[in-house]
Length: 257
Image 1 (spheres, rainbow, N blue to C red):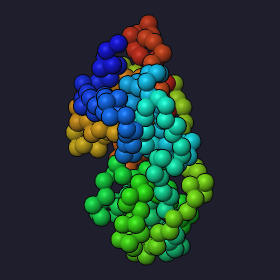
Image 2: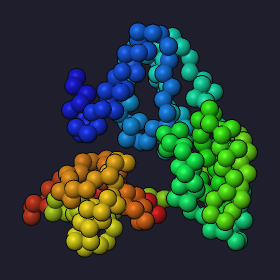
Image 3: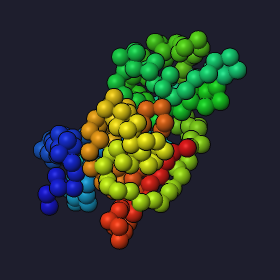
């Protein structure tokens, strides 16, 4: 089976990376632990690994509903334990009555410390509490160097993964018809704006598809694609149901509220 046919050309380098991981495990009989992967990358790893009898494979992000997860590829005779994913949950509090913090504020503070996004898992900012899942190799660095964000002083401490807060975000489904599967058309429909404004957002680099910036309004979306618009949240093309008599696409979309 040609694995490449199921994914876009721009995803080929990551597919090659996963194939290289698998080959390395096969030749050296040593497991591979990845950095944190976004959902699209996880889908690629699942597709590459399939049900191959020579490997044991797993994903873990600290909780079942985690969005960002690390992958382990191991020889088939090895047992993968939860501790093998080397996950640490750090928690800090801040005075929410006096300082308003949002996800981008905190994530930006992590980035300013030179920490790559790939080293960080899910981040929750809620009711005066910040929680982050991270690679255990950098947890001490975070505790020592992440001491404030905006006007808030914070002190991170390690907590059990079981104490990770649940996100209150919900996906709202919608069935609609669109003239095409172009990115600008779907952004217009999902986010309730003119096609011209949607195109301006795309041209300005404000729109991502599957966690990659796309600056081409004519980009053709596929079923399962995740869209994000800066400042207006994420959405998804859930299903392409067919074509109407007027040659419009019947689609199901969802938007994160």
